[in-house]
Image (tube, rainbow, N blue to C red):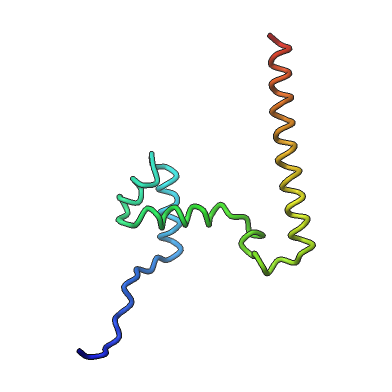
Amino acid sequence: MKDTPKPDQRRKYDADFRAEALRLAEQSRSTQAAARALNIDPKRLYQWQKAAQTPAAAALGPALDPATAAELRQLRALARRQAQELEILKKAIASCLL
C-alpha cells in the first residue's frame, strides 16, 4: 500500500450556515428534527446551541483574570439567590390574594 495522505473527511460549516441552523432549530419543534432537515449530526447542532448560549466571559476561560472570574462567580450566585427570593415572594403574594 502506498502512504498517501487521506483527505480531510470532516465537513466545514461557515458562520452563516451555523446561524441559519441555530435559527431553524429555534423555530423547529425539536433540535433533532432541524438536524435531520439540514442533514447534520444532532450532536453538532447541540454543541452549536451550547456555544451560542455561553457568555463571552465563560468562553474566555483561562484567559480571564482571577479577580474577574471570582467577581463573575459571585454575581452569578447573587443572581440565583435573587431569582429564588423573587419566586418565594411571588408565591407569598399569590397566597395572600386568595
